[in-house]
Length: 55
Image (cartoon, rainbow, N blue to C red):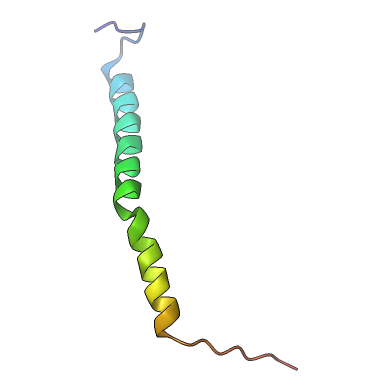
C-alpha cells in the first residue's frame, strides 16, 4: 500500500490512531462541555467555604 509515499502499515496505524484519538477527544469535550459548568454552579451554591488566615 503506497499512499502518500508511506509504505509501512505500522506508520499508517500510528497516523490513524492519532487522528482517531483526536476525534475522540473532541467528541468527549463536546459531550461534557456543559456538564462541568453545571456541576461547578451547584457546588458553589450548595456549600459555604470558610477562609482562615494565619497570623
